[in-house]
Length: 491
Figure 1 (cartoon, rainbow, N blue to C red):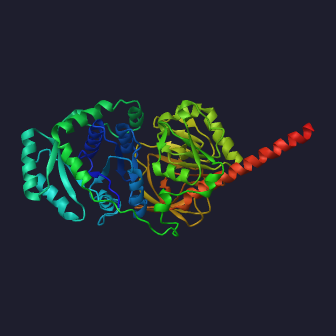
Figure 2: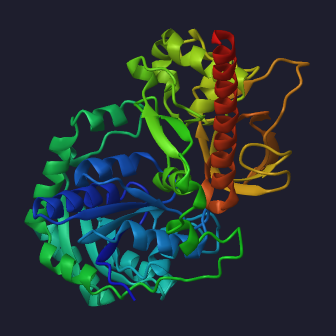
């Protein structure tokens, strides 16, 4: 049994203020010298970037639909091991998830799986005793979820706070431990493309500090720490390791005999254009035996010369399309790698860059790598959003035919393939709207819109690393043969 002081910050719905509260608490506790580990429920990338900026530690995603329960529990234990406090930010409303009548994929499910007390954030604008009815309903819907305390947001005054506090505590028996006033200075900018560079430059630091100040003034932080510390110990699961679809302990603590030999190098594009990666995806590749080397296409860098494989994640390439198009070292390196048979895996934004061109929202066309016979076109309206289960249509970099992964899609672009040109689809992609073929897979290249989670099918990470290792061995064999030929000629 392992102790992990922790809290889930949940909202009654999107826009209730849970991100502001999460960031303010993270910063307030960090200022007190606490090592705070951030987590985000669901597949979001933006909020974890906030967490990392505030805590100075990489934030992690916890997703109970894309990964197994055993994996999620073990990963939480692993990632929180050296933290004084873990703060898990919820997604949407506490009970909102993938299904209409079940907890799958919801904040509530993750609170149950991690046995975490919940701090419920309630927006009480234009509300008095009715706030008590809301909290009472949330408490009664799922008795296994422990709402340990309430924080009320957007109060009109301290008197307003006292009113709703008395009403909630009388009706629900749950302590209201703090409040935030209506304050436009606490409004977090809309989740948009310029946000991550702004976070990296420190432009949002004043907002984080303001939220921490406000919470320190109106919230019983010591009581919160007591609630977090009183969370029950988490029982680590030691599941059987013979099921390749059940990545639990063996995934987190995996060691590989392949680590004895030199690790194949996977070049990972990471900058403001390419930054959507699940931290545990990268960790799983490293545990499978790869050495990850980051590089920045926006900084003019090309593919690292030692690369044996390339991983280009999602992000906002459309906003930096002109810079990417001008980086001939990067685009030319992609083409050379593809021609040489180097494993090349790309998701969403990376998929867009492998196409022949990218048309941005202004109608400007930018030349891309041209590895995939398609053109990317940005749209004003969202093209796709939601969880996906993808099934390989044929053997490819990550999967054998018929094998499945789980992931998530969110994009405003569409991929246009010329009429009459044969298309090598990667997946059959299944979501709420049905199934359809998606992506591109041919030889050593695999790309699609879905951001997949490698923990949803354990062999996938091993397959990618094995492909990179095989490429490295072929490359070294060619180099040795060339060296031997030169030596023979010299003799």
